[in-house]
Image (cartoon, rainbow, N blue to C red; front, side, top):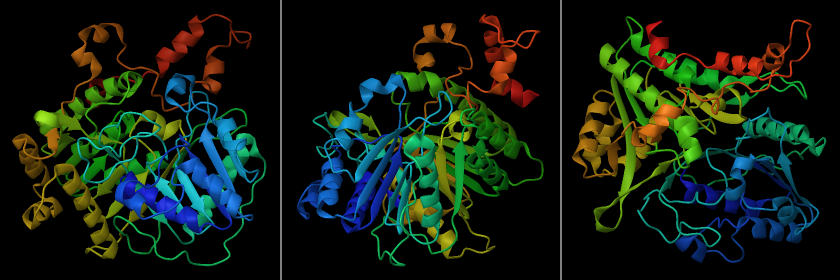
Length: 501
């Protein structure tokens, strides 16, 4: 496991230096000038450390090396936030063995959100992190850092994320996934070379899991052209894991707006004869941009308030938190949580690209990893999962000392302990406010619908849309009334109504 971008970017940099046959990257976003090593790490290396100049140098120096980059062909809404003219920048200013493509093969309004890097068929990186501007941070998360800047921008705030680095047979499966993504993007058939050796060797990591099986779970939205059925393995993974929880559930994520996950937690809390749970959610203080506050923030505030009410009614303990650093004059600076991770009973762990949103479970392309211990007693995998969970809680709380670590390692009373830490205000952890932009600007509450179609679980254009627009003669109508009725029919009941029914 690689916690926060300092560890991930540094590990990728070192792997790229060892690449001989190929480097393949796919992601939601890439930025050419991202420095992969910084500060004291940069003092120990020579040569270029920025993403594109490094890849350009490797391509030039190693005649047998090929480099493939596949990026989401992003929405026009993001045009002011993205690096311009990347097709020219990556393809025309480098050698012919470096190929950059935009991928627009997903469903309408869906995004390609998987993050995957492959090196020589021996090493794979995947999780929540893109190699992009304003992502780098270290685990201390200082309120201000001159190292947290890209392309001349002002330094950004604290930023938390989690990635995994893998070796072994699973890399072959991930290679096949990349090859299929490349083909679907219009890049033609791609067959990456098989590894020339069996082992990569030691990779520096934040924490380690023991060797053993790992599960791959994907999301792909349904498309009509080319025809492709929806894949909802991440959704099934989350719902099954929540239902299986016997003691506690720990989740950190960028958003919480998924109706399916809310309903799964509600079902588990209301299940008769099941043990009471300790449920810990770590989320950012609020989504980064206004469009995200509208798309996910409104639903998130409603769902979290409803979930808290269900927990009180059923006797489960629910703690919802944010985390901060201290700036000048004691000002609190929020740490942005971008990770997508869940731990259940210290026996199950999933890390990946999927947010707990509707679109991540049904519309966008996503990739998650899963590990599960089947032992009744703590085994090597269970102990490693617990170490990771406790390490993350130490990072988020800012607590130190053996006594604090023991409290964080316990399942019983975990929420009560975290509530006390958050209420004291002396450490990093804070209670989440459970507010949306509409709570701070009541006028928005009057003009916005209860559910927006900005965070759908299904494609906005599929067969049901066309069927809804046909008239009695089977022809597609030209008016907007049928489309309006179709969209309204897609909106599900508010969580309070769904729970009562």
